Every structure is written in structure tokens, then in C-alpha cells.
Picture (cartoon, rainbow, N blue to C red):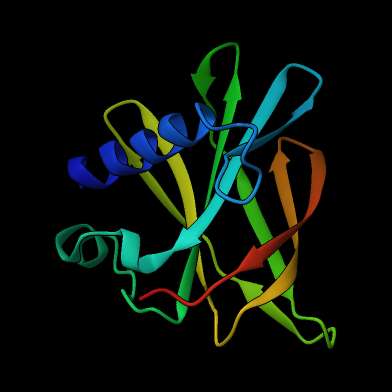
Amino acid sequence: MGRLALFLLTACLSVTAMAADVIKGERQETFGDMTVHYNTFNSTYLTPDIAKSAELIRSKNQGVINISVIKDGKPQMAQVSGSVKDLTSQSVPLIFKQITEQGAVYYIAQYPVPQQETRTFEIKVQTGDKINTINFNQELFPGE
């Protein structure tokens, strides 16, 4: 699992360097003293070993969303839930798994990507009694 945390951290950091590229870039929202980092990508970017260790399906028709919560420069545990809607407003719930290791905490979920289209994500992040909501659109492409 150390390789998974390293991959997800690397993915977040590398896409931060390309912040102007919204399609591939990591995004973040700040709520008071807490920052929620999030990005989404096709599961074919995961190596087979990393996908297996995270119990993710590696397929050109599967996307992955990665969420991390940071407060005062340190990872925070949270309850993360959400959904993704297609253009017809069909909603698919996102079932997040918490990955904790080597001082990092990530929340990952998968969703289907049957065709190229723009999807609307709604993510709820709860820390303590506060619930913060992030809404964003992302154009998705089935992988190769």
C-alpha cells in the first residue's frame, strides 16, 4: 500500500504543477483552515499492482477520484461521500475508501466512464460537525 500512497501523492503533486490545465489538474477548495484537494483520472493510469493493492478496477471505462483533506499542513481524517451525474442527470453514488499510510490520508472512489462526456461531481466532506460541499464539472474520456 505504500506504493499506492506514493502514487496518489505524486499524482496530486505533479498535477499541481500543471494547475493551469484544469482538465488534468488537481483542484482544491479552502474552507476556513481546512483545504480539500481533489482530482480525477482514468484508472488505466494506475499500475496493475497499485490498482490491485487499492482494490480498484483498472479499465479504460473506469475513472478514479482522489480526495485529501489538509489542515495546518497535516492530513486530516474526514467522512467523504458524493455522486457523479451524467448529462441526462443520471446519478451514480461514489463509494469512498480511506487509504491511510505513511502519514497520508486519501479517499478514493471509482465511477464508470462509458463514453466521452462532461460529468458533474458533488463531493461532501465532513470533519467534526461541519459538512462542506464541492461541486465541479469534468470532461471525461475513456482510456486506452
